[in-house]
Structure formats: C-alpha cells, structure tokens
Length: 115
Length: 112
Image (cartoon, rainbow over all chains, first blue to last red; front, top):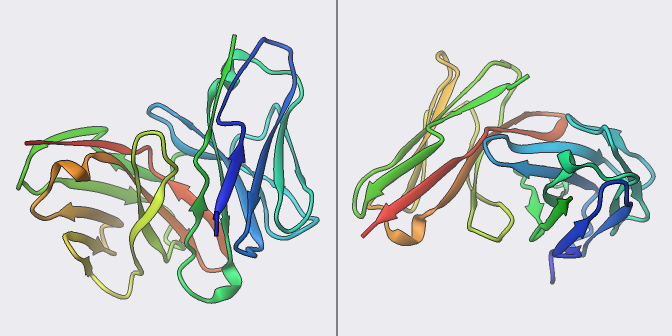
C-alpha cells in the first residue's frame, strides 16, 4: 500500500497563477483533509471531506477550493495564487467508522512557493 | 482561535535526557489527545494517543501524562536519542468530530 500520495512535491507559482494539488489514498478511508503548515502556526485545516461528495470548510479556507473526485481522491485548487499561500501543504485521510483511534495518515507534502 | 496551546516552540536536550513538551486545551468536549511526530521533509505520523479516562500512557520510551482538571497533557521521551530529533505536535478532538485541532508544534533537537 502506498498510503497517501501527493503531487507535485514542489511547485513555484507566480502571483495570480492557478494550480491544483492532487491527493490520493489507497486505504479506503472515508475522510480526507487538506492542511497547510507554516512556521510557528502548526497545522491548520483548509478543507475536509467526511465522505465522497461532501466537503466542508476548515479554519483557513479563503483562496482555496476543493473537489472530492471519488473516495480515493481529494484535490485542492488555488485559483489565483498569492504570496501568502506560500506554505507546505499536507493531505491526510482517516476512517472514523473503524471505531478505533481517529488516526490521520498524512502524505509527504507539497512545498509551494508563490513569488 | 488557538484551542490547543503548545510549549515550548523549540527544545534542545542532550542524549539520554528527558524532553518534556506541554499542551493545554480549552474545550472540555475534547476526548482524544494524540501526539504526532514529523521528521524533516516528511508528513506527520501518529506517535501515541490518550483518552481522558487514564492519567498516563506509555509506549516504549514515549509517555503521555494527562491532567483532566488542569486541562493539560504532556509528552515525555525517556532516554532520548538523536534519532528522536523531530517536530512534535499535540492535537485534540472529540467524539463525532473527526477533525483534529493541532498545537503549533515543538522542534526537538537531541544532541549527542
């Protein structure tokens, strides 16, 4: 099992450009998440999806959109990138139906720089 | 609104010492408190977690201490090793809400 995969690993954008970050998981999890990680700020939730076809805003959703394409895939789109969106982006998944600890499994991250 | 406050921001400990990282929370509905470990260039991974019905949980060299009345929990690493050098995040959630609220992270360095 690959777990959670993210593409690309690195990306440099100019202000105003758009791009989509891709995420896929092969653990048959229902829930998927997008976080951004900034120094001194920890991990902040951008959007999450509790199941296929549903998405909800997290703590910092402005400037982002998401699509839960199917149970495996959850993409994050920046329509018009801004320097404030320079960050490391992590996708994660979890399966709350297991009844066990609500462990989230993280991907390796995408390092995005907006100039 | 920071619902989980973590300290210190960074910590340097000699090999064999016992680093302690502290977290405090505000929401009394929280009932699940995990710690995540993140190595440079990698995503965070679950290290150990505790529920409020116990005051302490040990897994190998890692121990969570939990104080429900003070709304605080901490991570202790016994006999720390240079390989423990990483960023550690505490987090919290409650039943029915799968979202985790993370602390701001602690960068731990273990020097030989």
